[in-house]
Image 1: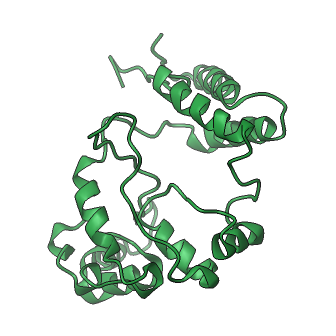
Image 2 (image 1 turned 90 degrees about the vertical axis):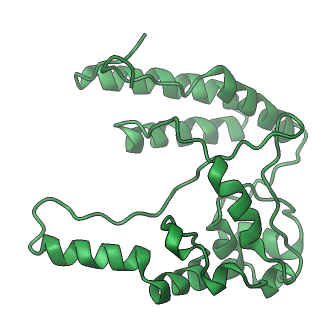
Length: 223
């Protein structure tokens, strides 16, 4: 936000740089055509057809749960950087629990949400089962975060996450119409994937559609 107006930066110069980079990989046939989380995607993870996945910490749990045949073949590494020595880190997702307005027992709901995110035994199970990483700093010494993971060849994968976590860029904000924005972006990316446009074009179209919809709903948008 700037001066009470939303800044929509979907089609920013930085995002175009990323889009153009990936467009080059797509044009060279270096990106799998298997839809993410489709069975064909999991098969590719297990048999070596897919060699790299860029994702958040929870992606480790997804891979372990869906591609058993890949056990021992994968490792976790820091995110590639545009410049040598860089330490930029993105944020994909971020699990959260919330107490909704109108809840019959808000105090009990809050107590459960707090317990789920701060109880050592409960969150330790979430690390084991889903590959989650705690936001509560008191949980950073959980034994599950210090152990080697057999799926990843015994690597202590959370050591990599611990080094990256402090560098997550928190200067951006999810927009007020993210469901609509995500749908427009997915549509544009799908068309580009099918050869009907480009990834950069999908950013431009999504930026335009998002700004138009925000203004239609009476939201102030920065020029």
